Each structure stands twice: as structure tokens, then as C-alpha cells.
Length: 179
Image 1 (spheres, rainbow, N blue to C red):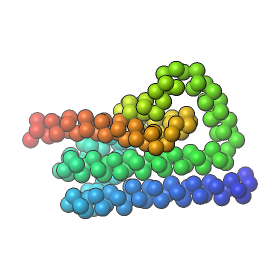
Image 2 (image 1 turned 90 degrees about the vertical axis):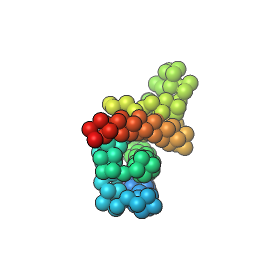
Image 3 (image 1 turned 135 degrees about the horizontal axis):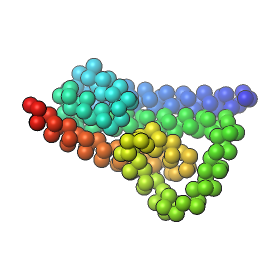
């Protein structure tokens, strides 16, 4: 690997780390502070979101957080995660001939799937809600298919919010049932 690729890779990795620091630590702590949520609970929700994805709603509800605070913190984590994954994927694409080959072959195959070419990034509304695909895979799918990043982030976030709100309704229903 040449020095040029190493520099590009580290630059992309640094951008990913900045996105993670901003959206997984700084912004959630600011949102938590504005909502009156203790820092420990904010960081617990951030960690839960990384592991459980939208199912972390149950952790936030279980900790007694306000629904708006839960959604704001979890969405910040989602946005940061999407941006970081896209940046890391870019780093590998710039430094790997194999990854570039996969992109070209996948791009050629995707042109043969009318549903995906017709609806494109809009399909990302559904992907984060699917248990098997989830948030992380939907980001990689949009990256592989080279869909517009802003549109992809927008549609992934809509799907994320829909799944989170649905699970929040279930969580509050369960809390009432057992309270």
C-alpha cells in the first residue's frame, strides 16, 4: 500500500472519529443537559443504542427518560454512526482495489433490479426497521449502491425514527401494564 493511500485512509478515519465524538458524545451530552438527563444515563443510552440499535428505546424508557430526550439522543447516535460508517467505507474504497472491484460489479448488477433503480434511497426507510438488516447494514447498502449521501441519511433517519417511535409506544404500553 502506498503512502498516498495510507494518508487518505487516516484522513477518512480522522473524519469518522470526529463524527463519532460530535454525535455520540458531545451532542448527546448537550441534549441530555438541556433535557435534565444525568450524564451517566445519557452515556448509558448512547452505549445501548450502539449495541441494541432502535431497541435501546426500552433502556431509555426503563431509565425514566422523557420520550423527546430518548429520541433526540438516539437520533444523534444514529446520524453519527451513519456518517462514520460511510467515511470508513470510503477509506477502504480509496485504499483497496478489491473493494473498488466489488463496487463496480455491484453497480452493474443493481442496474438490473428495477425496484432498487426506481426507488433508490427511498428503500432505506424500511431497511433500518428490519431486524436482520438494521441500521449498520442499511448504511453499507447505500454506500455500495452509491446512493446520494444526504438522501440516504434522510431516509435512514426517517426509518430509524419510525422504528424508534413504534418501539417507544410498545415500551410505554408495557410500563403501564406492569406499573
